[in-house]
Length: 244
Image (cartoon, rainbow, N blue to C red):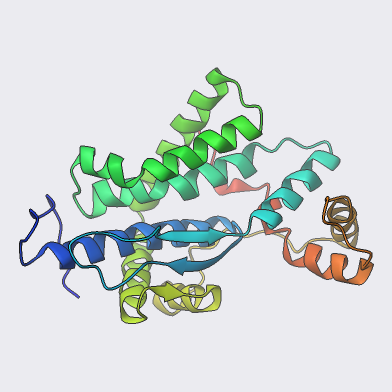
């Protein structure tokens, strides 16, 4: 579909629904492409389409919260800091604001309004991880720096637009295999951070932490298989994510 930009058309304007459809689908596509880039564990993208005079429901990228918890517990068990894991989470949240502002020319106040839930998500992230105010500011600065870097990448922009188009064409829902397939069909695997495959002892320790969760099961094989698929969040390389 055409890619509108600039101020939001007024209520009743013929172009309003088209504008809102593109903006919200780009917003969620941005979350997804950043998650793909950082190997942050996510599932479906969901937008309530068609849009008629306003955005309904709660458009979102469905994150794999269980995987994030396991990954951070795993890092903690190794005595490693969780800085990159938290920073990745921030970037996945903040990137939609950057795409709205810098790729779709959404005015600042409007972009802030669209990103309100993303800001709340980050606030909960900082609180749940006991991040002090000075460090919160550091994370915000680092996230802003990395988001601006991402939106300058031609591959990132192409992937966001392709996923947004696919989301619209698919009625507002894409499963993980679908949106990752769109990304790779558009730009190959160039956007994805490289990370080594988890070692046997990595999976073993992650499975142990999985067994300690309140809803733990007595299925060690199941825990092992789940842990093996959930270690992507422990990527410690970051490809220069942290600015000195």
